[in-house]
Image (cartoon, rainbow, N blue to C red; front, top):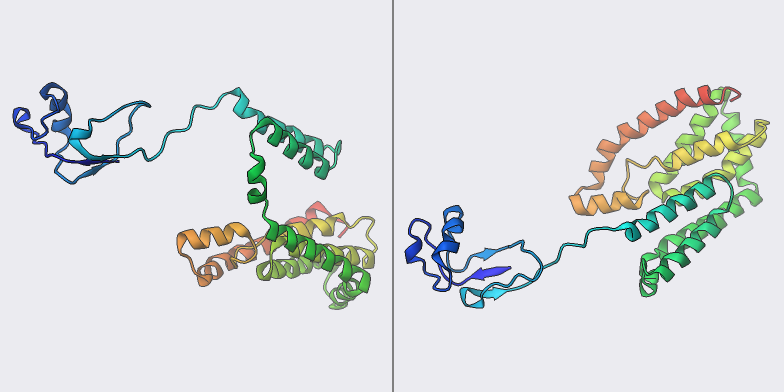
Length: 265
């Protein structure tokens, strides 16, 4: 940032008020802009460029452009994709891959060891751990089986049971976080699968995953919603007004597509 000390007149370069600016060098710039004493300019200049202090009240370096990325900078992305591939293919568990990549990133200098504690969201980890404990309690206490029995006793067609589960998990997501909703919904999905005598609870667990990710009508369910709400100045009513139709669209999509993907339901 530079604060101009003198005034430049564009039509008469010979009478420029800046005594240390040459006429040859100032003629081009003066035709493009008129500077008055007290103006503040932001200048993008090559590294090492110096401006004469006599022409400016203050010269301050605001920021520097990051250096151009090289092959070494692309290594973390390659390692992350490789670890993701190992996890998807079932070669290595996700926890082992994540811990290994974290150690490699710190040793290679891509992540500073002093910043690890700042990067980890400890509140989110605490919330997930609490939700998993509550999920285990719901499953072992029989509450999940009771809720599954209530859904089945509602007299809904068998194909609409996944839709009901989706709506329940989606509503929980709007009130708490998606991680907690998924932890609470999985025992319910397992209980429903057992009551419906399904070979595998995987279809209903997929419903829980989709329902826990459907959080449009409330900023509470997802961290990015809260970030957008604060940055954009949105209100809770804005999310409710725009997100409710989107939630209903997802309910309709699950009701139509899920029976096609899993006809045994």
